[in-house]
Image (cartoon, rainbow, N blue to C red):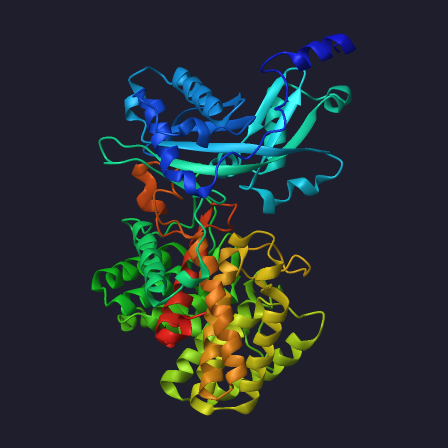
Length: 587
């Protein structure tokens, strides 16, 4: 342990102390001159842009820079200066020195700049500062007698790590384990202004700078219209096509930061991906994509279909879920080559009927026998398949089974202990299909009751969003329904567009307006989460961008792309494009 004097001397040593109280030096209007300045300093061209001394005079300034080529980070570092110009000059010099060789200077095509300010000390005893909502917004400074480490919010986004993970990594790096050493650590979080400077070079005629929010650009509410919604759907379709492998296997989960797939899997989400591809192929009139969806069906059946006696099963890791069987059957039913898989579909129909009970309830698992949880999901998925069959056949026996289940699950859902938003979109979609044929008043009333409650519980007003990039998502931290997730927003949109069309058809103007606004806000949230361009993919290597573009992040701070993030939002968006008029997109 250092003596008090030694600690003081270390604290005062240059480069071995936390940053001074820094200021935020730049305004959005300085983007052009920042790009010119960075280009000039990096290429060591002269003279510097006119007026740069005055425009970048604020200080003291703490700045992070990362030099990238085709999305790959080649070198990075921190610097402190008495002015913005001084700090930027120093950090670019240090990054150059960290490059493998001087020739690398010429190949750098983008520069990530983060200006740290408003440093505040935080305690590990009260971890509110480490909440995920601050990931990608705030950075972290870690100081100890062995050194100082800072993590910019853009760095944390590009590595997809949270604050406490970074703390653990640094503690391990400095071998800080015992309680005495832990007490000597000083933690400070800081605010950060984020800029991405795209440098002129072989692939770009002129440099430009973009001010980022959480490593991205904010999607303005007024930008949500028919055109941008169509683009959202087109990019999501492209992601599914790009992530469908040659043998018909769909990528389940992809990590842009780790640049690899997960080995996890989920049969319900896989078959929903199949349905999404079929619907997208139909919407875009894309015969090639429809053929690829057939390849995906063949692959899934070859890998996961089993038959016991007369029952068709979708099995994964020893489990056969009602929802997986129902969605697999629905995928076969929606494909134009349905007849090709008729025996499979009929066998899975028998399984669903076997799991249904005369009181309307479903047993939710075939395997393991006797298991009967996940009632908020699987029965609604089975009813959606049955409602699809009823649309085709108008079979009275099928209608009676659906209505028996409707009555059972309406009563089940309305019990306070069972109330859950996950129940709502599946049952909304199923009952709306039946309502369009029967115009049953009880179905109509329950669809309204469910979706009114959903909006009351889950989609907060914009004024209650701590950061504007989270607006429109379906998440309420005061409700016990799990963390925010892109797939939740997507499936809620699938149900809400049906509720909207029902309200419009029945002349319920108040509800149709409320649902319309909720859908618009949800679309904005999804657009915020979609990987679109070289700005929000600044850390993704060019060679991998085809696998990422069009994908939808799990949250604004977690870049994991799971297939249901994409498929639910794609299916919801396609329905919105068909159900909305041009005026419905207006604020």
